[in-house]
Image (cartoon, rainbow, N blue to C red):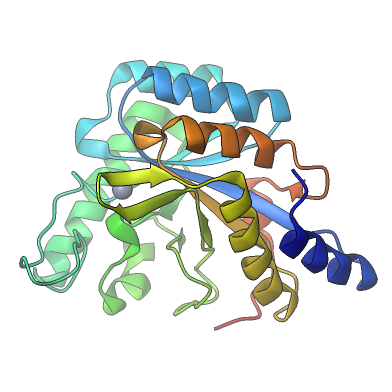
Length: 248
Ligand SMILES: [Zn+2]
């Protein structure tokens, strides 16, 4: 598991008297599948909590019952139906500026409401916008529909008080065959880069991003190793969101 680039970065953390914190977000949950069960086995044995971004329009009662049995899974709203409303030449977006803001906010509201019906109090007041993007003017409106925070995939925080992001993606989405899992070495190099940015900006928790439905064997092997990495301190979703923000 040793990786020279990560070992070098960890050396800096030790010298600073800090231990790297990492948290986990998994996207696109709709039902109980063998992949979700595999994910749950990995995090369950390591005692890791997951922010589970659920697609409300497709989520079913079976998922609700599963999450109720496994409190390490923290469901939150992932748009409404993961539908792209951007034109073909633009990056995909469900909550972008392609529709009226009240319509977009309405999608978030009914998504959150649907999850509250399914998961009750277990649902967190957090939005994960599909494809990690949303219109800039949506964040200040989110409290109107009961959402207090959101999470995308970047070190930049447009609204630092509301945003806790992910930074390391276990999947490579640009391979010719579609998506492919990254090797442990590749993920450790990306983790080192993310930790370096965190170290320069107040040692905030680094977020790991996964999509259980598309993981191949490489991705699963990498995740099992990362989950057991002795130098990483896994923090709960709540702890990740409670960390004071220092980057913008
Ligand atoms: Zn998604």
